[in-house]
Length: 124
Image (tube, rainbow, N blue to C red; front, side, top):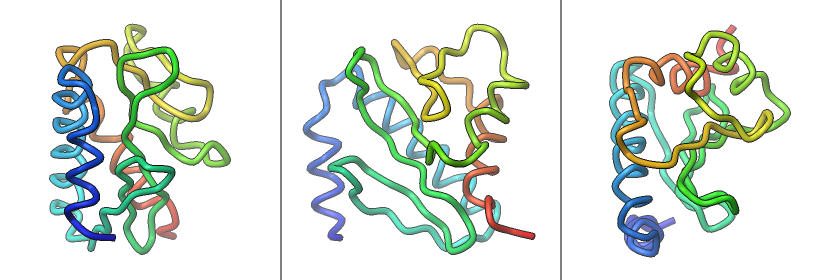
């Protein structure tokens, strides 16, 4: 998938969602760099998606309810594990994602364990 296709996907989001999603993308890139993990950035279901060789895919997008979200594969425990330790203010889309209404709700230090868990999901 070309970098231009991913950039076009970000450009298609409305400005408030795009700003939040760009911050989440930066967090994913930072965590992957800290892990020294090769990261693939591509489109899945038309949404920016991120995957490491020993991880599970994270996607960034806009849920039907509005706002924006970070999604994990629903057949993993990634979101449930995060939900069990996350502050009560976080909202979830079942086992699929963490929902945000606005960019100010992003707290990188709190979300870092979620991203780390996804990017290392299959590490023994």
